[in-house]
View 1: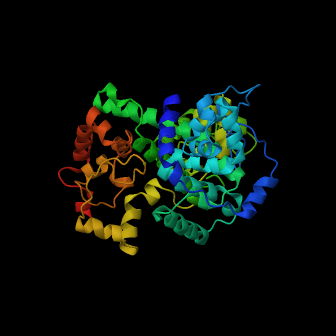
View 2: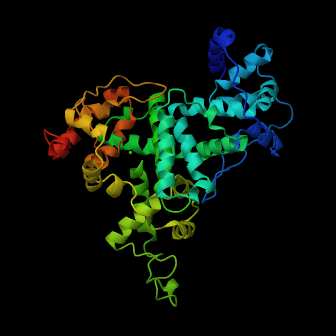
View 3: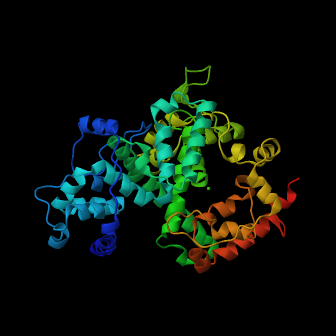
Length: 449
């Protein structure tokens, strides 16, 4: 912690004279935040604002109220001018901010003076280029949006989201978020996103180690890998909010594996022939599902996956026993609403139909085989193509996805990892072998008419 603060302090000293103040907050939002009866305590996360379908605990270490006097962290650091202390707080990540305001009463008081702005900046520092995706997830999870969700409102939302993503001037400070809204976003990140990111990382790297026979597959993620993973999780949740089932409606693979296992575990518990449903037929009793029927099982799997990350978090981390699992799944198993990812949006038929009816500039780039070389792993934005993607398409543009990349490749997270990991673990050779086994010397682009 001291090393982190020292490095950031040196950077700030060089920049402090040229720093410009933040734009003044919107007066309406300031009045709203000021009138809210918020407990101004050290904890960053107080409440979950967005509606949720399951109970999600916030990590205890971020909710602990300091007991008694807070020790002084460093007299020299705390004696800095308030403007420098504020600037220092503004460049920290969420975990660093939490640690510092817990450790120092001086920085705690500084934090309270500008809580909303600091939380916004620290959230953006933590999420990097995934910040715009996190904001879109929050906006699309609000009851005001979900209750009025139609094809037209979703299209308008996506246009606004795409404009934000493409803007070079995007800032979370321009989102007009209230303090409660920022706290809600941080709660979702700290409780749901971080836990599932760790789980996915472990799951995918174990699969990679199995393929490469190399224990070096495990290790800390680079900033590029973290950003790709966070962005993928948020975008999956955005798909659930926009196209999923109910109000709470790549990372599809671990969820599909988990829910398939759960369906096997609870098959008899929810079968309509189970004696516990005696007297409730016909019709099919509430809470009963025919998971032996392959078509019904596949459809229910898609609908349940479209419930989103909160349900997935529940079944991974909070289910207490088999009875709790059965009751949770009986409440949340559902049929899909229209089309949702995988065989629908990401399948071969859907992609061919889109190309025929709504061809895009990306399709033209693919047809021309425009160059798309690997240009390195950008630590902050992770916006360039990952090495694995450029390898399978031989450094040229491709607009194929989903169906065209088999599960055996997706299960070890090929596009999540940076070049260093692929080189060090031998994953490049695994990718080449698996891709050739699936497509031979050519590739799926050669099969398109």
